[in-house]
Image (tube, rainbow, N blue to C red; front, top):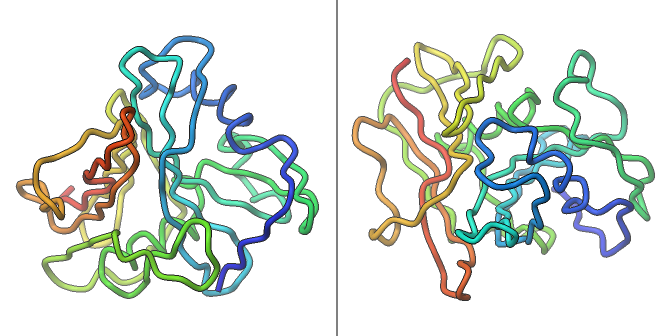
Amino acid sequence: MAVIHRTTLKPTKLELLTGWLPTRPWYRGGPAPVPEKSGGFRLDDPAGVVGIEFLVVTDTADPGRTAYLVPLTYRGAPLEGAGHALVGTMEHGVLGRRWVYDGCHDPVLVAESLALIEGRARAMDQNVSDTPDHEVTRSRAGAPLGPAEHAPEPADDRDGTRLPAPHGTVLEVHRVLGPVAEDPPLPPRGALGHVATGWTGPDGSRMRGVLMTLRPA
C-alpha cells in the first residue's frame, strides 16, 4: 500500500513539469507552461518500492487550457538505463531524495497499468492512503496478457505514447486529454481494453475521458 505523506517537495511536481512539458512532442502549448493539477490516481507497487501516479495537469498559460496525462514514478534511487526518462529530482520532506521518471519508461508502472486494465490491480485515490478511486473504470476483452517480458520501449508522437505490450498488443497512453459524452466513458472502437476517469475542467466542471487504450499491434 502506498502511503501519502503530508509534507514538502522541493521542487514541486508542477515545478518539475514546467521545464519538462515543452520538451515533449505531444505538448501543444508555448515555451512557458503554467501547469495546474486537475486530477489523477495512483497505483500500488506490489513490492512497495516505487511510487506510481497518473497525474492530470492543465496548462493554464494555454488559451485552450489543454489537459495532459503525465504518468510518473518516484524512486529512492536512479532507475538503471533510464536517464533519458528522468523528469528531475526532488527533496521529499519524509523520504529524502526522489528520482522522478516519465512512468512510460518504468517497468513497474507499465506492469501495473496492464494489471489495472485486466482487473488485477486497483486504482487508488491520489491524495488519501489505502483508499480506492471508484471513478476510475477499466475493461479488457480477450485472453490474459501475463507479465511483460522486456523493458518498456515507448514511442512518443504528437498524440501520445505507444508501448508494445504482451501477445501482440500495444498500450496507447493518451497524453492530450479530451472529454467524451458517455459516463462512464466507453472503450474506443476496436479496443481490447481501456482505462478512463474524470478530471476538473477549466470552468470547474467534471470532465471524463479515456486515459489509456489497449489495441492489437
